[in-house]
Amino acid sequence: MTDSYLVRVGGKVFEFSEASLQTDAPNLFTEMFWGGEVYGEKEIFFDRDPVIFEVISRYLRGYEIFPLSAINLPVGMSETIFRTNLLRDAKFFQLSKLSESMITLDTRIGDIFNSHFKIEKRLTDIEPLIHLELKRFGEKQYVVYKSDGMPVVLFHMGGVICDVAPPNSTTEWRFQPVNVEHSKILREIIINVIGENYDHKIDVFNGSKSISAFEIDGQKVYGSDIYMKFKDKTAEVDKFGRIRFLLSKLIFSLEVINDQNTGKFKHSIKPVWGTGITEPTWLAHRGT
Image 1 (cartoon, one colour):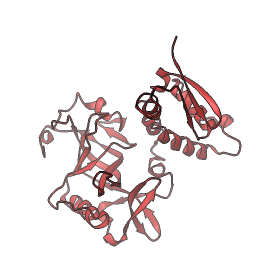
Image 2 (cartoon, one colour; image 1 turned 120 degrees about the vertical axis):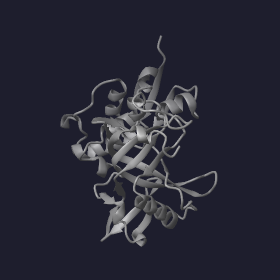
Image 3 (spheres, one colour; image 1 turned 90 degrees about the horizontal axis):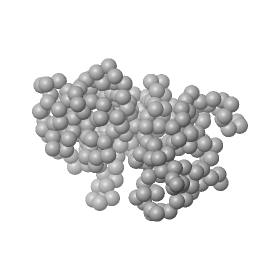
């Protein structure tokens, strides 16, 4: 007989098989049931909205949940608000594929911080640096550009060498601007705003996949799938198994991380959207 697992959400009980909870893994369920503080237990509780989780439960069981139907929405909640809340809970439960599937061409910029006030800003337009500050969004901090009272937290630049690490790896992604002016601006932001002791000669910046979408070689792909989708089309560039792409445009946020081990702040480029190609031959061994 197949083991079952109980997930209590806001007073309502949902029963799942292990196969369903392994959907979109690793996630918060697999972490808690098979690797966390409740290892060996078969029941966990979350103080979240059971109506929203009802949709997530269908997703975990393999059903299509889009497009959303207004008939099934909570009373008084618009489809836009429900979609925002669903994305928030998908992130809470660490369901990366579900989160990414909700990023569309029209909503990806606004959804990144659960706000519709955030727009793109070219790196070369970030001047002077005194307009930059740190702002907290949830538990994380980001570099924010203030212009006429409007916060701009997503930047973009053209021409970026992007080295993508294998999935489920602790190895960071790497981003190397082709334009030296972009490298200079990023270094100045990191040094002046974050206060990080950063080598002025370094032009390769750390990052991670985040919740992102790409168009590579004309194919649309999410950040969580980009490595497996293209690993056979391009060569590994280092001992960590990273593979290389040349992005003609990258939209990203700059996250500030407080390293608990060192007590120091570190930066992380968090891609939101990018378009480009698998690495050309001339890029195969650059900077490795």
